[in-house]
Amino acid sequence: MSDESLLSLAGVRRAFDGGRIVALDGVDLAIGSGESVALVGRSGSGKSCLVAIATGLDKPDAGAVYWRGRKISSRREWAALRRQSIGIVFQEFHLLPTLTAQQNVELALMGGRADQAEQRRAAAAALDRVGLAGRRDNLPSEMSGGERQRVAIARALVRDPLILFADEPTGNLDSVNAEKVAALLLDLQRERGVSLVLVTHDTELAERCHRIVRLSDGHVVEDRRMGENVT
Image (cartoon, rainbow, N blue to C red; front, side, top):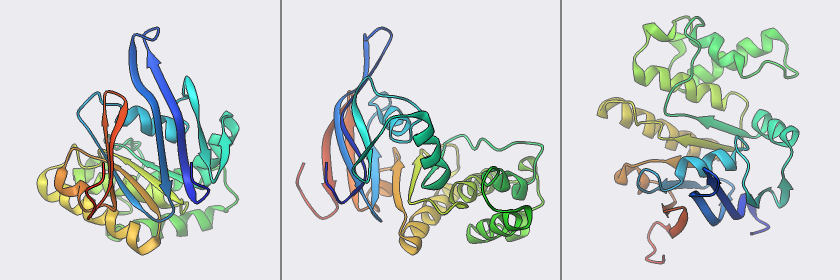
């Protein structure tokens, strides 16, 4: 674990079905501030499990997760990190169908210190950043898949997180919208300096990140910076 790491996993193990299915086995991984990391591997290699543990949505059976060198274990600590510093974008958009794009983004700000007017302004600004200024009042059913995913990205970014996890964010999109969403995530990472962990099966998209981390059968089998031939 590096002292310069924003988030680190050390010796993380996670098993299911009474230990018969091992999703992660002794995984070490460090994410630095401002870098983009592509997490790749076949289905069942442990990618989504790693994201769940790295964001506190699941707990490891062994090992630990560290935020800026400090071990994080309690639900309260994880809830605070997700509220303040960690954003998550899922393959499924998870938008509430009865709320507008603006209202879906505002939900991420509920329970914070901002008043209602500040929440509205922040949500509108987030939607503007992802190119949806003119779609704020639309329901999810009135939007394309690419637009719905951009709403989900705006919701994840509205609190200005330090690290953004995107789990197969282009998996349910056609090629045109997939490219738009991929370009948006990478542009936001560069412009805002947010760390980006991108789970993807798309080799070309992975190669646009600073690092490629490959999982196989719950192990990290490759951790390569682009331009290097080190595994």
